[in-house]
Image 1 (cartoon, rainbow, N blue to C red):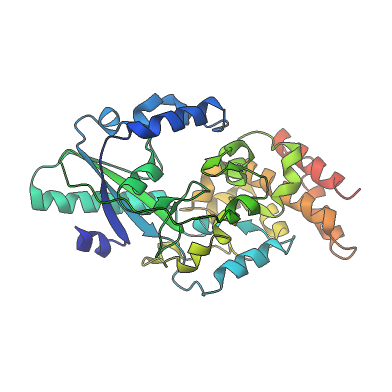
Image 2 (tube, one colour):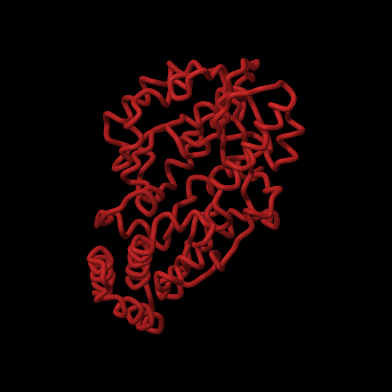
Length: 349
């Protein structure tokens, strides 16, 4: 199976047991504290997330798969390069994973092909494939199947691949021997807690999504809390800081598929360029990209915040162009966009 998975672009596979009952108390406590924010779907299915056989009746084992996503031409000093982007206030910063093709489409197709290949070998097979698209405790399953350990930022870490990878699962109606889990290797390091711009990692292994820039720019539909806007800097879609600072990511693997190569000028563009996109242009340029799911309105909302942050620190030579871009949308048809533009313009004073 490893050879079949490798041929499909997966870096590693493992098998997790279906008893995740020990994860239920922690998940329930996280929900009870409201740390999931407006992600109602996190609570909608109750404990089915921790009970694979209830989510997909007949499930006897879960095959997990890891796919590295750093572009193939990523240089060795990529972490420093990405931090440098954050030091250029007028540059739009999109999370690394979102600069290529929508991973949902890439992984789901290949997970299905892997399951079909397994069926050719073992006979009729009942399965369902998931990748960040169903009530599944992905990181927990990955950790229990030897894909790595849960870092203090809650992401899965691998000693030879860091955390720059996607996860997928195949729920199977056949029993496979479980993979051995690995031990944690974070030690006393808390670099991810210290670097988080908004303090969203409230304790080791505990994230308050309501403060997380990835949540605010992607999952959150309404106004971004005013107190958090200055902390977002020029991050317009997602945030990689907790991964950029992680020592294990010096070992981050490179994608074997071209799907995750940077596309559409999503790296190095100016905020003003993206802010000028019409809705039609947004849809055209983000076709096949995970960015498209947030829609044009939230795209503009996020960029307005970043422009406001740029206006605040801009010199006399840069500020007029930023203000002009914002002023062009001061009467936008969206009340959400107008409010964020007004806030951004006020940052000059």
